[in-house]
Amino acid sequence: MKYNRTYNFSAGPATMPEPVLEEIRDEMMNYRGSGMCVMEMSHRSKVFQQIIDEAEQDLRDLMGIPDNYKVMFIQGGATLQFAMVPMNLMKNGVACYVETGAWSKKAIAEAKKYGDVHVVASSKDRNFSYIPDCSDLDIPENADYVYICENETIHGVTWPKLPNTKGHVLVSDQSSMFLSRPCNVSDYGLIYAGVQKNVGPAGMVVVIMREDLIREDLDPKVPLYMSYKTHADNGSMYNTPNCWAIYCCGKVFKYLKSIGGLEAMEKLNIEKAQVIYDFLDSSKLFKGTVDKEFRSLMNVPFVTGDADMDAKVVAATKAAGYDNLKGHKSVGGLRASIYNAMPKEGVEALVEFLKKFEAENA
Image 1 (cartoon, one colour):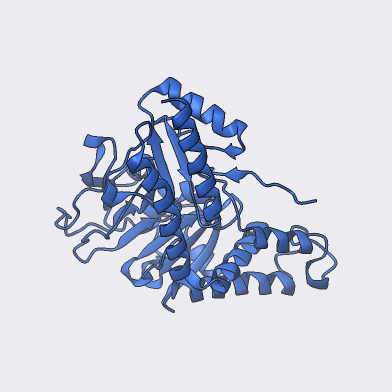
Image 2 (tube, rainbow, N blue to C red):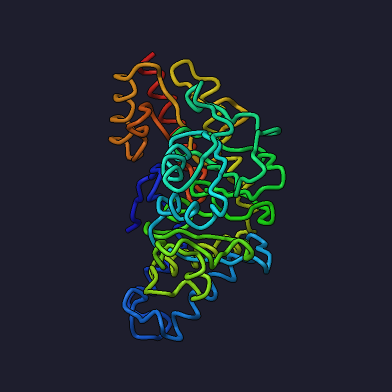
């Protein structure tokens, strides 16, 4: 009997590729003859060392990560990085942030605890529905880095072009668009991504960091665990890492390689997003909330213009088996997160349902 899975449009934890889940299921009780589940094995064992080594190498292959960048698997999720970035990178105590939505706002608030934060551009004036022009930012000479959230999960905006940092280090939160398209890692000083959206189970962040930015001269009050050097020097195993998440992410990295890498993934993501954006552009009931040029391929917020009608849509979609379409509590409306693992037929099915709903509620 075939198990009918729900089309899960959650912003995270999100859907994972079915072939990956099936492989994890098959190895659950006995990983490759080890006689145990990965959740049970020592992180110091040769078996797990092979798992983490393969995961890192596969990620390096996927993204073309240069040799002078460290890859770290760190617990705490992306939110911990709001503090960890300024703790480690604010050598002069000055940083520039671009405010494009809820997550960059949170990062700004946290960074202000550690130094002088310049908000050098913002799209707050139009409720974060676009990315501001960042071709000629007013960046102080002594700024330690320029920070962006490259895809805002809640507001559904993404950067079509990176900012001109005028030679300063670029830091990017890529959590909700990580591995959704090719990435030139050398454009960045540091990339981080919470894995629960596009890669694996919640509870971990991947950090890709240029080696020359890893410092020894941190404030002695910085906890050892909050130092990137601690994780870089210990191969992400200063303490017991999130072994299960690393294992699952490794499976996803291999899966992405098997389907043609990030170029193939981007092509599919563009096709999927086109299905829902074409519908929104032609609909009389539903309307997208983001300027076309800055629409995310991953998170699609939309509204009817009436809060009660929005709630009715959410209830109807849930009853029909399309889950987690309610917009974030801070903005309301609806949101379809169509990450890498969401099949195109899931997006097509949702659009057909919304068309039917619109016809019945015109």
